[in-house]
Length: 236
Image 1 (cartoon, rainbow, N blue to C red):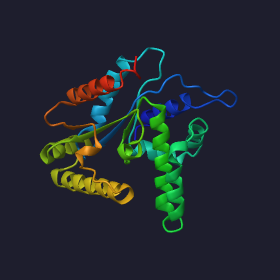
Image 2 (tube, rainbow, N blue to C red):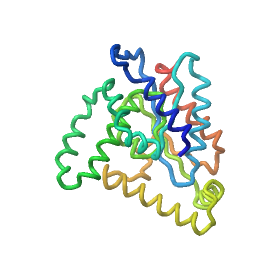
Image 3 (tube, one colour):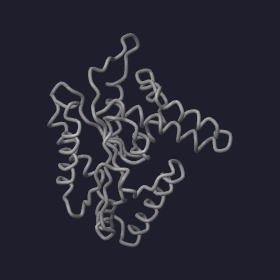
């Protein structure tokens, strides 16, 4: 994980968190975007292009859009100060049932369910801040009740994804295929085990886009256009 990406995410959180004396008052709610993806579909590349487009449409004095992938969310969870800092600002009143359910099973699976609880809480807090793209971690399910959330699924044929992994991760073909299979199975199991959802169900998403038929720039443009039209009242 690039240090620069984490630092940007840290600044995003701090800019939305209250100081020790004066609490932050939000004037408006901004959209958030969840991105589910097949391994090798180019989610990170799409998100970078998407942020460029959305930031170009934002007012100059506003906070910029930021994206959090699995590694960045896990890094934030390692630093307990940041989730606590966000919690001072956002009250999870609509999602107390999540804590109750998790607490009931903590005695059976403390490490796994504690992490799920922390991840769920962090994703909700980030999403309710707005102007954030959350990649993976069941973000579309966790934020499904939020009116400011837009859900995207990125797919591509296996051959296209193998090529992407070979290029980006510098793997040989055999290792790339094994990596894709392992990651896709893990993501499918994660959503099924913890949220009882099928990650491939198109009904969970506003749009499902094939990145082998669209360039990453075109994919980002489609998402940005849909978000700006759907949430026209929330954006400048």
